[in-house]
Image 1 (cartoon, rainbow, N blue to C red):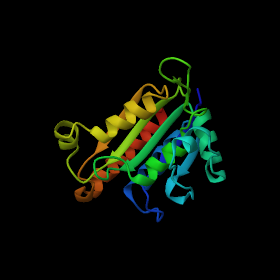
Image 2 (image 1 turned 90 degrees about the vertical axis):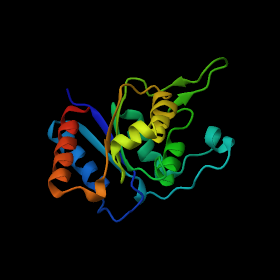
Image 3 (image 1 turned 135 degrees about the vertical axis):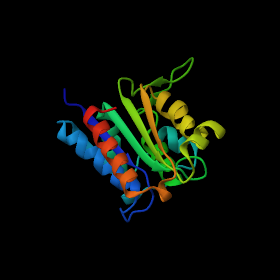
Image 4 (image 1 turned 60 degrees about the vertical axis):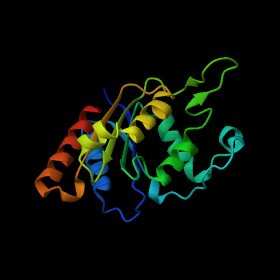
Length: 194
């Protein structure tokens, strides 16, 4: 059954020639080939300010440049976020984007008592993270802290489940054949929305 898919490409280089861009394109091609409705979001091409106060986060106006991205997120049944690992977590531009679009009323609703209610329940997610170090080192030695924070404190908190991940290590040293295998895997994940 066709589903609504939002693919957020979070590499901050607007040039479009990074591995993350190719991975996002391959995932989108697979999803479209399987009949899914795909919304692609290139964070580096969007112009928006960072949030500076709690009041802005809770009650401020969302920038006009992010309305389409917000709508794609709200209607998505599956979200894929692709980004390079910078300082152990996502690049600052991607974090600023997520803070802007995943506000109260979009990703969560405050309650009088207890934890906020996640508003994105019923939506699954996949994180695709590229890095220069071996993925096993990031996963086991660093405990994938930046990815875990995104999974638990943002996506899971908003109600998304299941959340799957692909950690692609040693990308700068990867052979062409290895890169082609990654692209083929993303295409298959897009077809199956996993």
